[in-house]
Length: 306
Image (cartoon, rainbow, N blue to C red; front, side, top):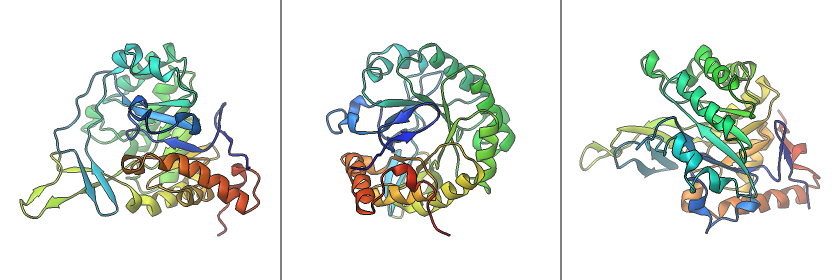
C-alpha cells in the first residue's frame, strides 16, 4: 500500500483528503455517516466573533453541475464555539486533524477570533482564514479581492497566533498567483483554493430568484476546471503547501488537483449527496498509486507534464 502521508506546515496528515469548511458542519453532524479517523483532516464551519443566524431561506438550490448557496456564514460565535460541548470540546476528542475556519467583517474581527483560538488552541491543528467576506469599513469590498487588504488580514491574524495559518483564496480575481504570494508574504503558512464563484438562478415560473439572497456561491463539478487552473497558477507562484478544492467528488478528481500542484484536497459539495465519497476518495488514491507503481502521494504533487 502506498504512503498517503501529507506533510504540511509543521504537522502531517495521514492522507490528503480534507472535509471542506461549510460542508461538514462541526463534524458531530456526520459522525454516524463518516469514519472520521479515515480522513486526513476536517475543517469546521466559519467562526466569527459574534453569533450569526445567516441569510433568509431558501439559501441553497441545486443547479446543473453543482449547487448555489447563500448560507450567510451561520455560526454560534466564538464564545459558544469554545465552551459549548458540541463544538471545540467535542472536536478535541477526534483522532483527526481539525482546521478551524474563521471570518469577520473587519480586521479587528479576524484578530479577535484568532486571539481567542490561540488561547484555546488545544486540539486545533491550523486556522483557515476566509478572506472572501465583505469588508464593511471599506464599503463591502471582499477582503480577498484586494491585494493589500488580503495581506493586512493575514498580518493581523499572524500577529496574535502561533497556530499554522491557511488562507482560503477567493477565485474572483484576475491573477490568483499574486494573491497567493501576498498572503504568504504576510505570514500565511499555506493556502487553500478555491472558494465559491458568485452566481444566480431564476425560477422561470415565478420569475423570482431561487435564492432569497438573489445571488449565492456556485460550487460543485461545474467549477472544477477553474479550480484546477487556479491551483496550477498558485503552485507556480508559491512553494508553501496548497489545499486544492472545487468540485472534487472522486479519487480521479483528487489526483487531478494533486498533479496541478495541490498537497492536499478539500471535498465539499459532494458530501451533501454522498458522505461516503470521502472514504472512497482515500481508497481510490491508494488504488491509483498502486496501479501506477508510485510509492508516495507526495511524488504526484505538481507532476502535470506541460
